[in-house]
Image (tube, rainbow, N blue to C red; front, side):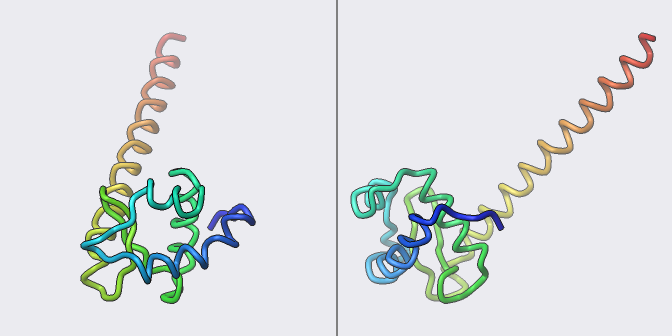
Length: 115
């Protein structure tokens, strides 16, 4: 798990409490809401959410998200769309990784044949 900027670590607890109080899967908080409340940009929010989720601690990790925004998950059903999205991203990144490796091997093979 990568480290998080100390300012974002300090904000993370307030962020969690805000999500618990002000969000649900039917009422997510958008990136604009996050910026207006905390003054942090999309990339910083994603870093903070990833850091919190990576802890695997149910007190701080149960943050769901979809194309509409972020929300607190009270049960396993609420987190299912987020888990499916993460699994899809993993598969996409893995496919890109494997494709780059294949392309590099083919490039090396072509270079060897040219010699």
